[in-house]
Length: 270
Image (cartoon, rainbow, N blue to C red; front, side, top):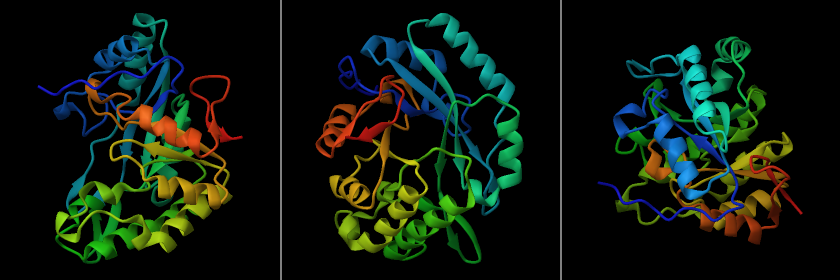
């Protein structure tokens, strides 16, 4: 049984990146929308956004199952009735939206999504695409990270459908131990290019706490003109809700970011 982490103190921000059983990859990990809402109330989290996966990219011979939008929105409505003190936002995590603009536009037009985040999960391998963290062992580790980061400016330029970019350090999650600790300075030029493109678009950077975001990357975000941050645990189970938030919030505050009037507002630079 997994150990529960300490809950955040009152006044902490919304967890703006949460998955439930409506995300195709979350059911086997114990995702549970009702259980996650109960966990939020238990730890005093004021708000959360269920940003369910919309992954349209084919990796090898695998394409993710589609999101049942009506079923998902119905589940959110039931949870809002069950947990009236908790602010529950609808949302999506759009994987590679710049490659699937027509399908993304059609889906967004068919539902009321209050928090939409953009993500990149893919890198080129052998003339096709592979899920980035599964490509380690197939390609050199440095190449995977650089290919990943160099695609982000194209993602930003190619899609206006998301408001914040999640897990810019996604490839750090499976960085091979044989390469030593993941060192952002090894990829500073590519990180800065990605961050600058996002900052120039006026969008927010998500401080994703699956692997704690390096303070170095947040400092580069400030230096490149980044206007705002959001916070996301990327939880796929109730126990992971708001994991790492105390440290993430302290880091953001030390970098000059301050909360808005509502707990689910962006944190902007003072």
